[in-house]
Amino acid sequence: MDLLNDLKATQGTTYLFVRNDLTVVRALSDRVAVLDQRRLGELGPSADVYATPSHTYTEVLLGAVLEPDPDTALNGLNPADFVTAMPRAVSRSSIARQRWISAT
Image 1 (tube, rainbow, N blue to C red):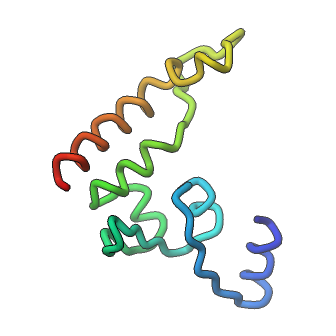
Image 2 (cartoon, rainbow, N blue to C red):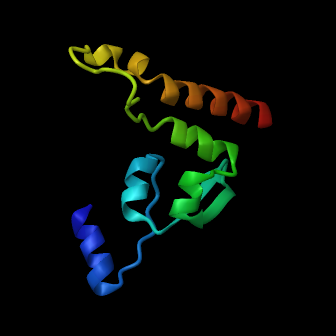
């Protein structure tokens, strides 16, 4: 990814990067488009899409990105218990997924 970012900065290279892992997309993209069932659900600057998603499927994808809960101690945690140590991410994903399912 560093090489791709270097090429973008030094050569002005543009990429069409298709991925459902928004962590990787965030590292490479200035603008993001989210497709939901082959339709454009959301389009905008990366910072805006990540900060305030306006489409339910964007929320589902962002909810699938696990981020550590700073209030939870991870000392001695078994990797199998990782999800239970992430209540914010799990909760966000579950709520968004239910809204997305209801909307389709």
